[in-house]
Image 1 (cartoon, rainbow, N blue to C red):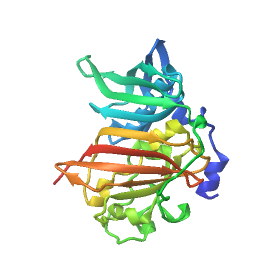
Image 2 (image 1 turned 30 degrees about the vertical axis):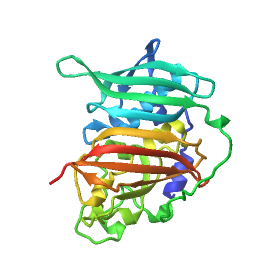
Image 3 (image 1 turned 60 degrees about the vertical axis):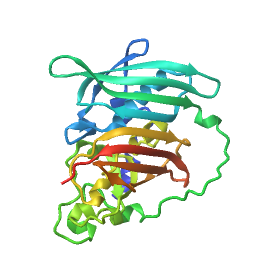
Image 4 (image 1 turned 180 degrees about the vertical axis):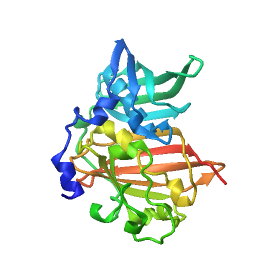
Length: 295
């Protein structure tokens, strides 16, 4: 059975998938939620920033009168770890078409002190109420069909690029929860031949076949390998700030994610992401500032 057929046969529903279970919150008091951050969404030892943003996004959807994130900006203050956490969410302003809220995620350090991990400010609305009027010069990214792209299970010999490097890394737990098929043109880093261009492109979905929704788009923009790999850099690339704009409710089917970096300076780089759905519609955009390890 092909990978696509296997995913189709085991497709999970929105609201009843691993992603939904692992972002679910337990209400403790008005605007206060408990959650056990899953180790299944870690990269090296830290919890993925897109998964964390989805957790906070779910809390804001609960406290605000509107359900869909339109714009959400997060500052990552300290690295989150798997385990217990508390989310506190507040309403800043409510309006007829948009409502604004803020939320923070806290954990306890080794000394038992409460530490703020992330702080978010967001505006929510109703994506289904938006007019169907698109005027754009943006075009979907062009890269090969899914069966000609490569994921964590593929080896260096499968990739058909210059040999001598390691296979696509699957050491991060999050890789087992995602369906990522990377454009070979942005995969030189996996075999020791980075292109020198700050680009990363891939087909994207959840491994259990759950279709995308506005909440999972917050994960999609931060789930690919960092563009720093194609610039010849290695190691963790922690996010400092991430802003996501959700533009439309995605159609069923796999997403295409394209990420570019134009400037690395002073040990920081930006990543600009576009997410396109199966109807060739631009459904999300993001920009993040991240640190890189030089030398």
